[in-house]
View 1 (cartoon, rainbow, N blue to C red):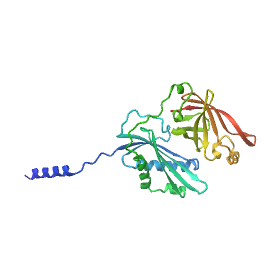
View 2 (cartoon, rainbow, N blue to C red):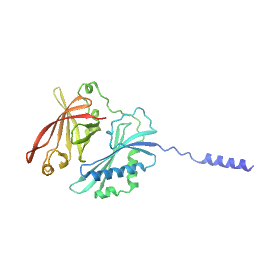
View 3 (cartoon, rainbow, N blue to C red):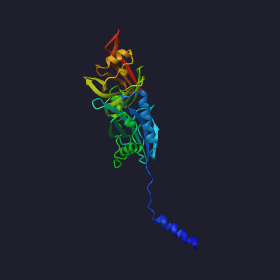
Length: 290
């Protein structure tokens, strides 16, 4: 009799207890931070901090992509919304007028080809490092869960016949990681005509990408964004580079696409002229590495 009463009791408890939905698992590809205004050690410290914060969020499965390809190098094959694939990175910059720092957190939904961002301003760089874990995690979670009602899947534009024969119709086709210069570790091109250059000396440069044409000739023009930095001219002696960076024009690359994975052209930058420097043009070629 007692056993039957216990069975009835537990049955009633199970029946009356609301069923809890299984938490959605988010697969997060982490691409680190981009900043041209902090040194390599500070960049690594901040990047490691954000990575640790991500890994400690419940129901997040984080893959460290900091030494890999760009955010848009992998195209999902199926719409598995229970295992959403997302990418996270941050842009950090300093306002020279106010000495305040800004972090722009970027979450890219690779399945839907959507990007969500949120910026936060800090009185000092130290405040970025001291951001409470709970605040940063809430910001990231809000970005990731900001548009769960969207169902339309927009694939990245695929290569067209013109891309395979040397021309391209959109900067989206260039998304990926590139290399080819002895002083540059890698160039990462993101969606929307944006990207960044990572130099072997640890410096990073934001870049913009646009397509131009003249008659039947198509060019890809890549331009430095932001202020010049002596580390952008590793070919120059340091004392010359420090002086040159004060008034230097933005570095630009002008490429012709030879095929979807090869860009050939020129780089307008500063070159050494005896004990001084001058504007010059170098021949360069970039190859896609992913």
